[in-house]
Every structure is written in C-alpha cells, then in structure tokens.
Image 1 (tube, rainbow, N blue to C red):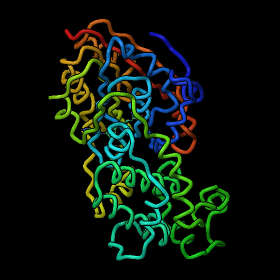
Image 2 (cartoon, rainbow, N blue to C red; image 1 turned 45 degrees about the vertical axis):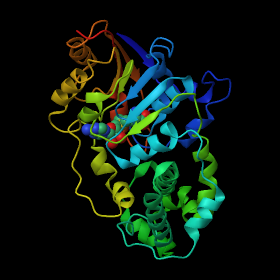
Image 3 (spheres, helix red, strand yellow; image 1 turned 30 degrees about the vertical axis):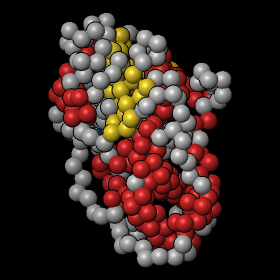
Image 4 (cartoon, rainbow, N blue to C red; image 1 turned 135 degrees about the vertical axis):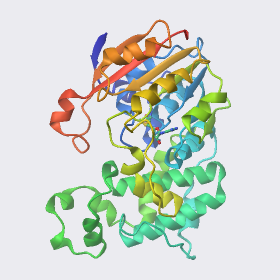
Length: 355
Ligand SMILES: C[S@@+](CC[C@H](N)C(=O)[O-])C[C@H]1O[C@@H](n2cnc3c(N)ncnc32)[C@H](O)[C@@H]1O
C-alpha cells in the first residue's frame, strides 16, 4: 500500500493539451469535490489509448469527468441529483453552447417571479434573481438551460461559501442592512462584498468562468441523471470511476438541501443516499459488483467506516490486480475540524479484470 500527500499540481499545471487547466474554473466548489486530488486520481486511470471510454457514475462537482474529457477520453457521466446532472449537461455533453451577457440581460427583464424556498437562504434581492433565473433555465432546457442552472448554482455558492446553509439569521441581518448585529467575522468575510453587488455584476463575473468549462474533445460525450445502479446496468465503457458518498460522512441530500430546493422551486423531504446511510458498506459491495461488465475500475473512498486494507479486500472480492494508495488530504478548515484532518484519509483503489 502506498501513501502519498494530496497535491493540486495538476490543476495548476498542464492537462496534456499544452494550455493550463483553465476549464477547472467552471467547477462548483461542492464538498467532496476532487479538484485538489486530480493529479493522483488521473494517474490511476489507464490512458485513453488503452481505455477510450471513461464512465463516471457519481459526477458531483464534475472535476474528474472534465479532466478526463480534456485528456481525450469519451466520457459518460451520471449523478442522481440535478445540481450535478446540470454540470454534466453543461460541460461534459455540451461542447459548443456558451452563456452570453445577453442571456443575463434576458434574466433581468421585469417579469413575474415565482414564489419559492429561497428567502431564508439568500437576501431578498438575490433570492428573487435566482428563482427567476431557475424558472427560465427549466423552461429552456437543453445545454443553455443547463448552463443557466450552473450559473444559479455558482451564484448561490458564491453567497454561501463552502455551501454553508446554516446562519439564517445572518442572511436576514444582511438583507435588512442591520450591520451592527452581524457577527464581525462574517462581515470580514469576502462574501459580504459580493452580497452587496447587484445580480448583473455577480453574473458577469461568473460567466467567463462557466464558459471556460465548455470545449469539444472530438467525442460524443454524455450526461445522465439516474440512480447509479440503473445507470450502471446498461452503460458500456472501458474504465469506471466510482466516487460515491463515503459511509460515515454527512449526506449530500441533507447538507445541500437548500440548494436542491431552490433548483427544484419547491420544498423537498431529503432522502439520504444509501451510500451515506448505515448500510453503506453493503451498498458499496453491490456497487462494485454492478460494474463487473466494465474492464477497469478506479474507486475513491474515505476511511471513516473501512480501513484502507478492508477496502482493498472488498474490491479484491470482485477484481484481480487490486492496488491501493492512501492520500493524506486536509479538508478546508471551513468543513473539517483539525482533529478530523489528522485522521482523514482519501483512499484510491484500482481494480483490473473482474473475477
Ligand atoms: C463524492 S460526490 C462525487 C464527487 C465528484 N467526483 C467530484 O469530483 O466533485 C458523490 C455524488 O454522488 C451522488 N449520489 C449519491 N447517491 C447516488 C446514487 N444512488 N446514484 C447516483 N448518484 C448518487 C451525489 O449527488 C453526489 O453528487
């Protein structure tokens, strides 16, 4: 078993095409995102010449699929959640449609704004803008609708750094300009400046970043929105990347519920993924089995419920030639305590031919 330290060298350097990995600016900063681990993850993949079709069953923020697209794989990605499937439609399946300032101007035209569950998540002016923009995005559909959905996601995340949807009182204080009541640490935070910007300014700042994620790679790439087991039952490929929610960590459906509710325009009763629940190890076992028609496997996982050697044994039940690397990966202070960072490991497992 090999141990390495996490690094972001690949995201700062070149992705093989000779230009810096500018397209990664398009990625939403979801927790669980693999942007900082891309160097190690991509090294675990066979080359596109050996494995031309890469399957990403849990797209999340999209960094691994986007990097694989840039490297020349044909990418077929999937995520059950709209917040991620929209990223797949905007950046993986789409290779030429981009957002323009005219698209934003259209969003700002006066019209009826639907009611929706965003008022305690964002200050009023921004809440109205995202509700209206999401209404347009869903009506439009297609690549443009997906890009507008990503714009809404990035807009919301930029006002809620690291997707922190607690602190509802702060939103009200900011909304009503009750500055003296706001926690000084929050006031110092850079998002305070952003919260005072008009929607147009925020969009104009985000659009070039989002458009940087749109490019062609000569393949017909695909994005789906299904449960991973349905998706894996009929998808064909040469290598599958599995990055399910890790057992023993917070469920995405709960942590990102306010975002999901704004995107859906209605209240949602979150149903946590089976990969986050008490039966996470059993779900992981079935998941690895569900990939047996795909010749190679790369799995990202944490060490909260299984030690690296236990994970290795689990994959070895299903595949030959299993390798394991552990990566010490300090999460951002905003999402993890110092104590957790001391023990958090990212485990990267590869598996060859199915048994
Ligand atoms: C760890 S994240 C993936 C992170 C991603 N690789 C990245 O770099 O951003 C896990 C994702 O799995 C999705 N998910 C959870 N349960 C699922 C299921 N049953 N089927 C498909 N996707 C699921 C979640 O919506 C979440 O986006």
